[in-house]
Image 1 (cartoon, rainbow, N blue to C red):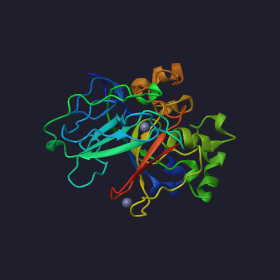
Image 2 (cartoon, protein in one colour; image 1 turned 135 degrees about the vertical axis):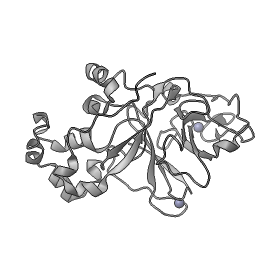
Image 3 (cartoon, rainbow, N blue to C red; image 1 turned 60 degrees about the vertical axis):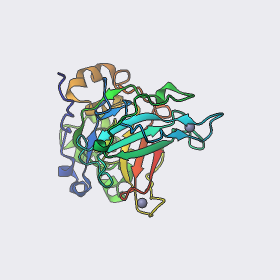
Image 4 (cartoon, protein in one colour; image 1 turned 180 degrees about the vertical axis):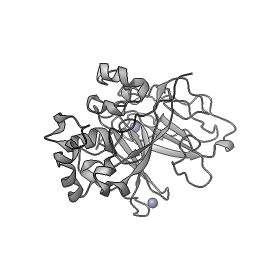
Length: 292
Ligand SMILES: [Zn+2]
Ligand SMILES: [Zn+2]
């Protein structure tokens, strides 16, 4: 049996340096996808869904020539594996699907969410329909099993108050710790971004990535409430500048490869190297997604 992927502790306790960050701590669940053979009864990325045979398979009816196109499974998450993922009513299973092509106007795969009560799905759909057209293979995730792990995150630098941003750009505070590399001297906030704020890779909850745009709150179209980060669908588990988030088991490989080839077990690539961040209404009226 393989070891459970474990994120190494952060190089320093950032709240000891900047106490105003402490109340902003959030728990995220890293999913740590690994190629495997998940069943409908497992949490997975790109695996078979526990889909009720009597429930119509969801399709995309937008922008396609000819007949409607079946959606493909992106992830299914059982509450037992991701206890911090809130679900509506008695539901204990979240299923995320998308249409595997980049739809205008934003050129991203449109997503759909379904909530199930697993015990009530007694007759599982055996052979889901395949998509009729696939524009890019990078939107067909490789089947992966998951090894969820809870970690602590702090907001993206861009989402902090001006006062905190100013504090974090003071190199002398970081330098005094003796653990921050001198290469960060001119931009110490980069150390914050790469090593201690937002984890890369597939995750549930926590703080969302920003950078393509400045942070913008997302509001539910049903009730106007601010939505919460639900699921981050990334391009890869880590990159050259944040290999410090690679689990212990992958660190040697990550260092050698600088994360470029070995860090994307799902093979999903979002819009040439970005993240697709899903948000959900706390009352479950609606969800939305955003490329970052
Ligand atoms: Zn479509
Ligand atoms: Zn709502």
